[in-house]
Length: 191
Image (cartoon, rainbow, N blue to C red; front, side, top):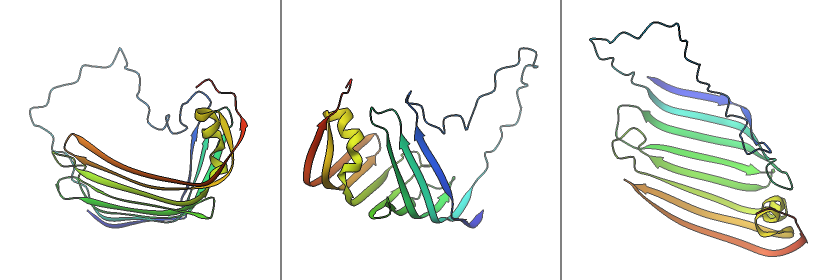
């Protein structure tokens, strides 16, 4: 049991490579089986899993560098000023844990993620809300070019997304507002 974990000024990168793989794919690797290793012995006692309790995990002044090189026009952005809290983690409890995440994309567009869920319960219910306001849509040109065939010259993007998991059922509500969008040049794309 740990009362609190604080991460001050953490930074990280999430990059999608040209081949679609992600830079974090290699963090956990499986080891190849050794053909000369002895056979595992069966235990007469069943092992009891560890219980982990964390009252609060806090992240302050974080940054995340995101890049996607899998597109015809590479995309890159920075989420800065990240403040996050995850509360009430208990691997033996069926009560909800809570998540709050705040930051700014490219230093000006606020993003907020609020969530709750029961990741350790038999029925893993949960909800996630994602709010994003006033991003310059021209920065999304690589995605627009790839999927719509045109770059974007100007406009703003705001999102309100809500996803809820109730047993096996997923419910979503997406509200996307694009203001004063102007298309740019055509982009060659295979999609």
